[in-house]
Length: 269
DNA sequence: CTGCTGAGC
DNA sequence: GCTCAGCAG
Image 1: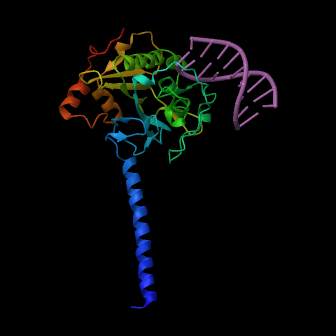
Image 2: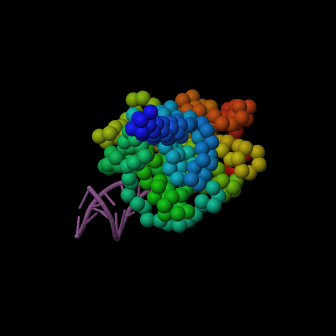
Image 3: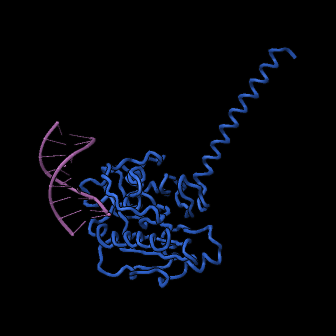
C-alpha cells in the first residue's frame, strides 16, 4: 500500500467520523425536541412535561412550551413556580420579541396591535420577578395569547395571583397553562393568531406532603364568580386538547388525580 | 398585579 | 419604527 493510499484512507475515515458525529449531534438535539412527557433537566428546573400534539417543544431557561404553528401560539407553557421565585420587584416591562427558538417562526407582536386584544402572558411576568433576565424572558411572542383585557386583568389575573399564593403556601407548584386551541377560532393579524374561547391552568404540588393536583377551565370572558367554580378534572382538559399532561406519573396516581374535580386540598382563603 | 396608547425623536 | 411617559381596570 502506498503512502498516498494510506493517507486517502485515513482522510476518508476522518470525514466519515465527522459526518457521523454531526449526525449523532443532530439525533441528540432532535431527541430533546421530541422528548415530550419526560422529566427534562432545564437550566434551573426539573419538571414534568406534557405531550406535544404539534411536535415542537421549546425549552427556555424559565419555562418550556409546545408551539402550535397553525394557531401561532403555544398549546401549553409549563414551568415550576418555586417559593423562592416569589418577589415583588417591579421591573420595567421590555418590548415583546419574536421568539427566535420557534423554528417555524413565532408570531409577530404586531398581530396584536390595535386588535382589541391584550398580549396575554401564559407564563405571567409576575411569576418571574426574581430577576430581570427571567422577567424579560416571558416577553417572547411564543408566551402570549390574545386575551380580552377585562378577562386578563380580571378573573385570570385573580387566578394567577392565587397560584403565587399557593406557591408560597405549598413550597412551590408546577404550572401548565394555555388556551384551548380548536378549529375555526377567530383570528387576529396578518398571521391569523387564534383567539381561544377558553383558557386552562393546571397545577401539581409535589412538595408539601401528598401529591395533589387541581385544574381550572375558564371561558374567555371576565367573571365575578369565585375561582373554585372553574375547577374541572384534568381528564376533561385532556379530552378537549388532546394533550396528555402527566404521562410520567405513576399510572394509578395519574388516574386518581386527573379524574378528580375535588379542590378540598387547596386552600382558597 | 394585568395591560394599552399617544407624543416625540 | 422605537421608546418614554402617562393612564386604566
